[in-house]
Amino acid sequence: MTPIKSACFLSLLLLSCSRFQQAQPTIIRLKGSDTMQILGARWAESYMKLKPKVSVYVEGGGTATGVRALLDGEADVCTASRPLRAIEARLLAEKYGYLGIRHLVAKDALSIYVHPQNPVQNLTVEQLKHIFTGKINLWNQLGGNDDAIRVLIRSPNSGTYLYFKEHILDGEAYSPQAQTMTTTSAIVDAVANNPAAIGYGGIVYGSEVIHCKIENIAPTDATVRNDSYPIIRYLYLYTINTPRGQVKSFIDWVLTDGQKIVQQVGYIPLWEEN
Image (cartoon, rainbow, N blue to C red):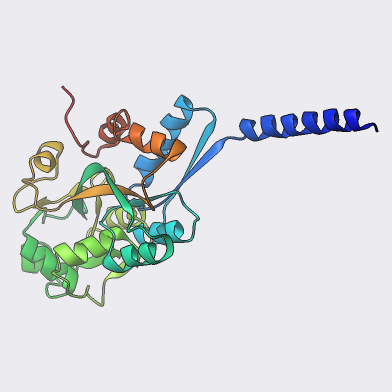
């Protein structure tokens, strides 16, 4: 092959490779909070319709799992139902030189689930603490039936597990009799099938169970928005540093048009529409 033909062939090959690379879809990987699994999936579905050349993958496993994936380069975005812990921020700083960038994306009520046949459907924060630490272990101590309370909790890698322990149990240990469930859906299913069970999770889960009133206040859009419901938290997206490119475009969309999906799913958007 002559030098001219070789140069032409190389140019065509490079052009072909360039076009092939441009045709490859951008992949955005979200991993973390089980609480945000439904919301993340809906965001992904809507965004990929809007941007056909972008693929958004969503995976749960718990907030701690998402942080670890972010640290290991296995996720572009960590979905989180709690702020980063100090040790997590330190690990990010040591590896990447950043403490992590937090993006508030929604507001959530942490609901307490009980069976529809359970006569106890209103609890105080103090009663919750005593139930989940094991100081109260019979429903008749709360005016209910003579059944032993079956306490259901999330695993320690869950942001909900840590949030509840810090904000409701005041850092005390969960009851040794508490049964650990891997997902919020598993907690809902267990409560729906056992009148003596109690568990917790996001407001959008559990249409088949009762979402307890806490201090006489039900978890609703209105009570979460005005902060009158006692157990309220924000939901977050975390990136290692200031997002760029398609990740930035995705997060910008989440904070604008994506807020409509927050409301559709059942969480509380960051602002009310006019």
